[in-house]
Image (tube, rainbow, N blue to C red; front, top):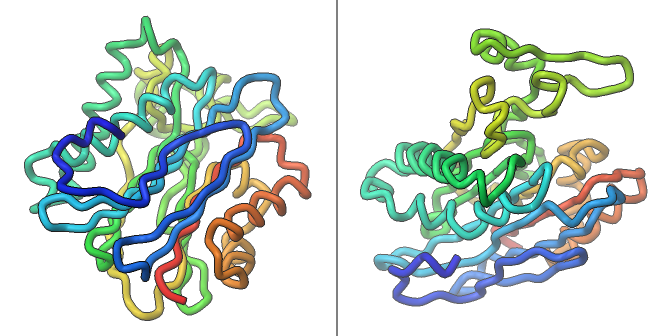
Length: 282
């Protein structure tokens, strides 16, 4: 995130990824806290999950920047997203006027940049779920793929992203000349290969994929307790409400993120798992 050159100040800056990594931070007033944890799965390849979790000051505003990037066929695309996607969003001139438009434009431009650098970045791709908290009052969430954001309001889980799965977007894929395979014992896949219908990168499949995000704006009120961002390694085995119930019981968001991953590993999730928990009060 060193490309965000227009900061007046920054704090609680934590951006990273490793085979076993966790940390925490808070906003300037200390009222909003976050924690994150990442664990490598059992697949015989390097860790492919990356995250962002930090607060910054920019143009007299406080922004919380939170994201999960779940790569496939390598870690170069999620690494690129970690370094560039938020920077590209905040560079958009209309971000403060129309954040949704800015986010959509930045997602598209970032994907085009990844595709143009495929000789260096390789043939892989990545999901993305991003959340921008503006002045602790407004949350702008966007996603591509099946990394998910879940909010807790009054103890009730609210999924604020849409899982982009091949079967649910079959029409779009087939209209672009692709197909969705449904082989016994396997998940649906685009052209028999990719288990998500939207992704950054994946140049060989791009004519049949989308990279435009679904977006949602949420006002943070007194009933808003938690935001959980995680890759599908968690959501495959832990339901939304169960994740909220686990996280609500643990005041420290870093420990909450760790516990969610522990639960997923207990249930034999084999994937890389990354999780960010943001606690708005308490």
